[in-house]
Length: 405
Image 1 (cartoon, rainbow, N blue to C red):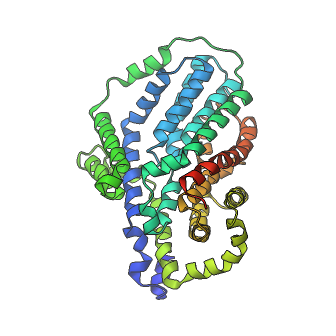
Image 2 (image 1 turned 90 degrees about the vertical axis):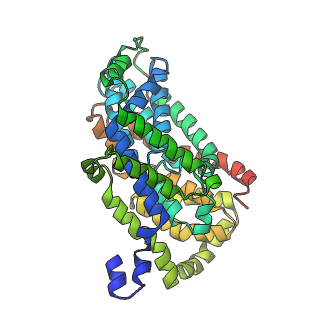
Image 3 (image 1 turned 30 degrees about the horizontal axis):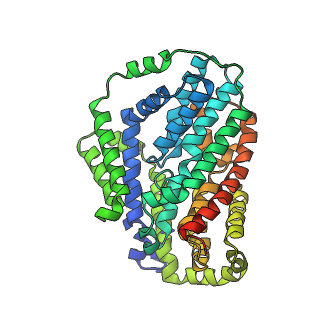
């Protein structure tokens, strides 16, 4: 696509490759690099075990621990597939220690609690999913500058609370345990003892993660672009060889990065060619009646995403809607952050297994032993209703923040 733009002189070369020189592109390189280093160091696995140790050793307690540890890790890991891959062996070990047989109700409930934390909570943090960073990167620079890591989380707070509370309650109802186990903390302690004390690599990775998150949150005050905060952390990990060359090559999704660079460049390409103005002129008469009623518009947008997800994967869908629908709704007074939160949240839905790589990673990461597709079908379908409820509850909050007219 980029080569065609250049060879046929559709746009100047500097416009065609502008996505590869943009701030969001370098932010995602930095974040994915830090994520790869964290995973290879074993720190994420250790953190998950420590969180689980803080919860009661009951079915409900450990399910809550899985969901909350996943949510905590998701705040800074934009690769949900890697997150669920981390959870796979923990789920099987916990299920065994609690005495649940393979594909039992208790085993499936633990897996779905992990799916909630590592997957379904990802839209509520700027660095929680690649789709979030992509949508943020496609916004105009002025709009992007107003959205920080903290403002994203604060704006998404009601969405996150309603989604977590409703989904976790439903998981407990749909997957009741066969019995209430009583076990010691031996399993978790044994696994922590096997890991030994934190290694130097884990300590440095932890410090880099803390520093990066502090830099992202405080960006409005120090005014250093968040991309260079992430790249600084990545540079430190590369310089100290904590992120070695093989891990740097295999641990980062380079296919996605090339796709991302091309898509990010679309913003300037469509502006250069005037396509954005033409699309807005064509769609505005169709969408204007809906944008006059923000609540109805956001719910219709959510339903449109649900329908389109049967055809398009989440990343192309988020790209398409951010470039077309968001500018029109923004002109009607709807804040772009509210729009992309609705888009990114509803794009995580999965009605069928093929729609979610995160779900498939969990399914195969547990060696197809924790649950079956038929067991979790009702929960998968229910997420559509959960997201609609969360959006409805959040709309008054967004009105109070001045995000909706």
